[in-house]
Image (cartoon, rainbow, N blue to C red; front, side):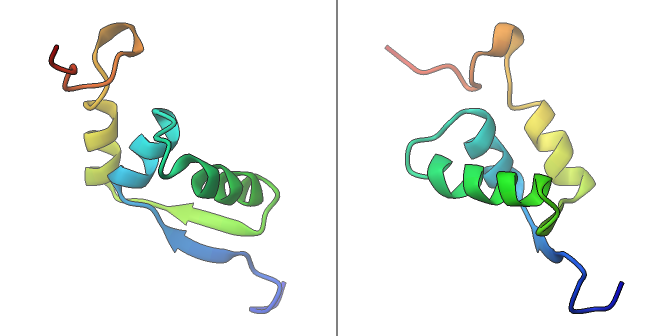
Length: 71
């Protein structure tokens, strides 16, 4: 594999992961497109341990977004 054959490396911060997981309307189309391209090998999505921890702690029990929306 040469450098030109290697997948492009992109970095996702927690806001990208949360946007994908929560299907945020203003982000979901672009994020799903990048995610599908990454699964096809066109991209490598990189993230930090801090972003990972922020994402796993941003979901409340039962898959509800955190913080809960106020009424």
